[in-house]
Image 1 (cartoon, rainbow, N blue to C red):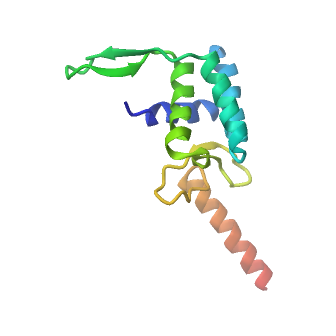
Image 2 (tube, rainbow, N blue to C red; image 1 turned 120 degrees about the horizontal axis):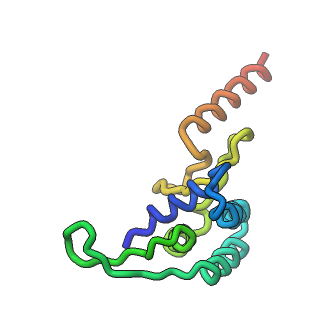
Length: 141
């Protein structure tokens, strides 16, 4: 079972400024996980607490006409939390981050091969690079 799509759902929810009312609390809890991304133990403790609060219910399905395979039950909270927990378990806490572009701060998953992602999008990376270039040029004058 690939849980990356569930983790990406957690990122989208953590970044959602206006989630459905029933997901506001979860959005805030997921945002706290990304806020703690620099502190491994804190991330793990937050995720463990969320795994207890939102238990996962796996089920067998053949929805696509193929072989039986596992899916998580359609509980947005449980799937989001389980996805983030799987990313942390498989890839490490340092794969969770907040965009370093000063005006942004959105959450992201670093799925790069060399763990080098620092921005939520190419747009923010470009904006930060242009600002740094202009600052260097201004200081050189």
